[in-house]
Image (cartoon, one colour):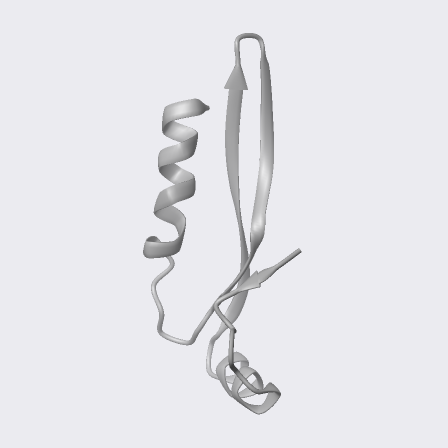
Length: 68
């Protein structure tokens, strides 16, 4: 699985963010086709301390709304 949001960060920067409230998040989304539904996880996203998850989750929410 790919981790989005930590490109170019050093291990020290990641540890700093984690100590100050950063976290790793997986979003769930659903896709349905007639009588069968699939619930899938996204790739892992790194959310920095103080960063809002809405901008990262809106795509998965809209996908589930349209195709779930």
